[in-house]
Amino acid sequence: MPGPLHGKKIIEIAGIGPGPFAAMLLADLGAEVVRVERAGAVRGPAPDQPHGDILLRGRRNVAIDLKHPDGAAALLELVAGADALIEGFRPGVMERLGVGPDVCLERNPKLVFGRMTGWGQTGSYAQAAGHDINYIALAGALAHFGRKDGPPTPPLNMVGDFGGGGMFLALGVVAAMLEATSSGQGQVVDTAMVDGSAVLMTMFWSFKAMGMFDENHRGTNLLDTGAHFYDVYECSDGAYISLGSIEPQFYAELRRLTGLADDEQFAKQMDQSEWGPLKERLTALFLTKTRDEWCELMEHTDVCFAPVLTMSEAAEHPHNVERGTFVEHGGVTQPAPAPRFSRTEATVDGLPAWPGQHTRDVFAEWGVDGTAIDSMLESGAIKHAE
Image (cartoon, rainbow, N blue to C red):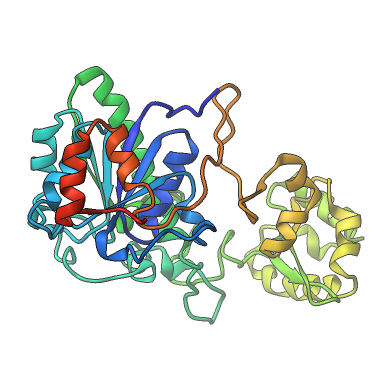
């Protein structure tokens, strides 16, 4: 069967990072997502090969010149038949283009208008430029990534752009579309990466309140590489393994398999004064074998162990192969849709498209009269890659 969002029609105003990621998630789950590019992005016929950006997978592409006198009207033709629209401009830009939430909701009262920004639609930072590193910094997250005596270390752009941004936008849009089925009313979803990143830190706010997390000493706590039993270790071949032996029974298994079951110093698992010396001993120990040798000893046990893999290695690991965690689509290896559904399967449906590749077809299929399409193409309000 089609994915769980089959039948939902969503407009994605082209952007970068979290917006395309949210659109990809919604498309993977079965929604018909159409990406709206700038008309200026169309540079001749669409090439025969798919676009190289995997984040664009699963949706068709139209080109609209929103600065053209008739550009807003062209977009509103699609809005009339959509369940949701997502955009990632700074606050006020969509309004200045004539396609802000008030205008769109007037055209389609059931529309969910999803907004993705770094700082949010309001607040003193709202109009400032920024990137993931800035949003997670202000959210109180970045300060806690890194090792003792070292600077904060940005965790790629996964926390702000994708975890705190794109996923929260997709969740908000799905929730608002669900609510609209009963109320008959759309609404605006204000998604800010600073907000989502703060929410991702909820457990650590709990730990802080319970006296279990020292926010002023990075790299000294249970989950931030402070503990010897929750860290990564280098092996003799220069590769790494990961440990997460927190619970007593898992820690006991770590001690057994490393030959440290009778070592009295290692019995002091939760004595933080011992964490430094114990980490030094484990560092030396793990350097005595290769990663594969440690895998042979510890994989499939209750140590809470896994090798630290690169992307290419992860795609080839037997567990991920058995699960189908990665797929090859259009000749490109990439993560498969998640999560898994028992009845309405999420799939990669469609290759990444080029700007304007489907303009004429989408407008026709979404109910716009052919004469009107020709008129918009002739005026330059919309553009088709042909």
